[in-house]
Structure formats: structure tokens, C-alpha cells
Image 1 (cartoon, helix red, strand yellow):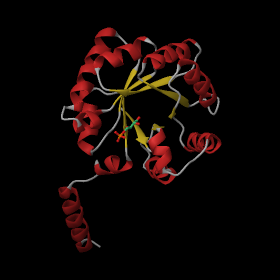
Image 2 (cartoon, helix red, strand yellow):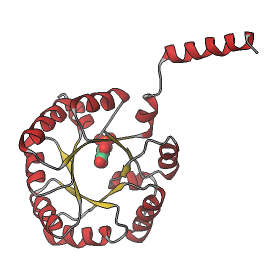
Image 3 (tube, helix red, strand yellow):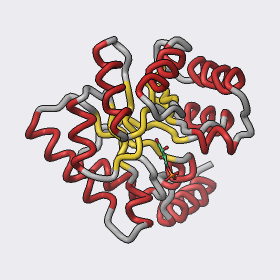
Length: 217
Ligand code: E4P
């Protein structure tokens, strides 16, 4: 399973990269706004900086919602760097645009996936990734990881090449469950990635080893 970081924060991207486990980055308009990045030029420059920082797929989201606008915007985003993956929302014109991008050699990540039906449509249109939002499904009272299991089964049975990119990760257990259920990629905030490191018995065990090491110095 590949690890992407779900942020536009350069310090956090660097920290995950320095850990040596980072395969890519996902962003969205909310994450860009959180960093205070304003205006198309600044946003495109920020994507370029991220692409220069991380050698992997970088998802950049369109904000248009009509076919012509999505295609126009997606072409501009794809031109920023060869590693840009155009992130397109799961709407009717989005599916049409994903097919257009597929036919024209531009890779896409279909975002805002909340059902197997939506994921099947995106895969049929040739999306490189589908992004099921498991945390938001949990927030609405359902079990987000059940969708990952369902998609892993369907994509295997159908032989889809589209990768399942588990998104809207809220904690370390989400990452572990996604690995167990067969997600191809998980995109996560830095906090949840770092939480994978933690176990109280590791801390206790290390303290004891270091204490005993003093006896052998
Ligand atoms: C990733 O592609 C999504 O934009 C992101 O994971 C959404 O996460 P959230 O539900 O925490 O906003």
C-alpha cells in the first residue's frame, strides 16, 4: 500500500518525506485555503513546489463543475508537472471529463466517492484513482472501511486497473484497516501517519533497554 500525505502544508510534507515512506500528496481546495494560498498563480506555484519536493503522484483538484471548465482547468493543472494527477469531483460532467482526460493521456483522481456505484463509474471512465472518503462516511454514522472492502472485491473481480485511494483518514486504525482490506493507497494527515509509530510498550521497553545499557558501558 502506498502512503500519500493529505495536506498542502510544506513543512508537514517535508516531515513525511524525511520519514522515508512518502509516495505522493493529495490536496483539495479546503487544504489550500487552510495554508492561506490565494489566487490561481499562487496555487499553481504551490503545486509546482510540492511536485519538486516529492517524487510521486500529486493530486491537484479542479474547481470547475461543467465539462468544458473541468477539461480546460485540468489541462492547465496537468501542464504544471508530469506528476500532477487531476482531481475531479464525482458528478456527471466530472465522469465525462475523466473519460476525456483518459483518452487524452491525462491521469485523474475521482474525488468525493461515497458509494460503490460512484467508484464503478469512475473506474469505467478510466480514472487512475478513486478516492472513497471513509472518515466522512464514519461521521455520517456508517462504517467507512466497509466501502474499502467492497471496492477491493469489485475491482479485483472486474479486473479494474483504477487504484483505490482511501481518503478522509481520521486515525492510525483507519490506515491499518485500509491495508488489511486491500486499499492500493492511503492518503492521510501527518498526525495519523505518526500515530502508527506509537505503542506504550515500545516506550517502556526502550527505556528499560537504555537503562540496562548503562550497566554494560
Ligand atoms: C483527499 O483526497 C480528500 O480531499 C481528503 O482526504 C478529505 O478529508 P477530510 O474528510 O478530512 O476533509
